[in-house]
Length: 106
Image (tube, rainbow, N blue to C red; front, side, top):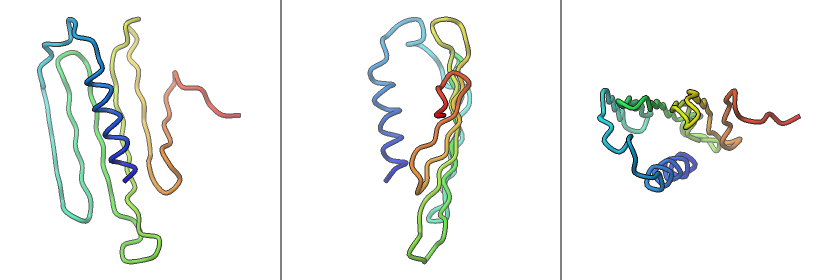
């Protein structure tokens, strides 16, 4: 469920993005591997410098604590010309992003 929420946030951000010079970006690379109940992975790279990759794996299969753990990262070039990268884990402890540009809790 949490990975669905994360995916929905990415889709919402993509739809809300203004059309501009990046509107004609081409997909340079795309890999998708849906290996069924055991997990999945995907990755892509576009001509405008956006890239992402993610893997999901079932943890504690068949137990009370069964959960999907998702690990991934995405990168893009901001309007200031800086490449921003976010790595994340989403599991039973919630969505945990990390990036040089993100604030860190004390």
